[in-house]
Image (cartoon, rainbow, N blue to C red):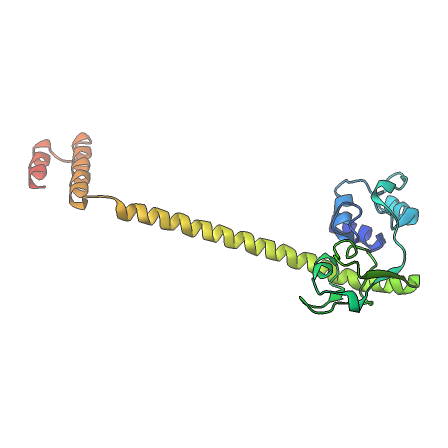
Amino acid sequence: MSNLIELINAELPQFQCGRCDTPGCRPYAEEIANGSPHNRCVPGGQVTLDRISDILNRDSLVLDHDYGPDLKSQVAHIVEEDCIGCTKCIDACPVDAISGAANLMHNVINDLCTGCELCIEPCPVDCIELIDIDEDKSLIARDSSSHFFDLKIELDLRKKKKSKMNKSIHENLNIGDSINQKLKNRNIDSATSLKKLQLEILESQKNEKYINSEDIEKLKKQL
């Protein structure tokens, strides 16, 4: 399965645009390998679709343009004088191609920007432009950024697992504290409980005839 995912992912365009209803190209490759339709990558075009069809040994399909529109070879550009440093574009970027911090000017790292357009909509001041570039430059940037995207997914999964583990540990500690508190609040007469247990043991010995009944009665009186 992992080899199949790698083969499919290698044919996808690595825009990481999410238009296929998955977070990016590798997640879509995983979905395809698990049986999802493989005609949802509109930016990849018919060529990509046909190659994936060959890998899967499936009939070629027609691109589902409901998952469009297409993407051009382009990069995002932030108009510096208009940027308010809100960080919304940084959060939206799937490949960490935007640098900056809160209330400070942001910049696009052109060598990583895939031109996915995901940063455009969140910008509250409309200060992000799209600039056309050569296809070769776009391919290099998309190839480079795919490693960052895969790493980001892996780190996010680790964070989720750690968060889930911490939540589970916290819940278990709360349960343990609750049980311990209930035990502390109980009015248990240890001496009475011990005597009751000893009497039950003696009765069981009597029933099994391991000890003479008269001897058992004598032992009971001693308790």
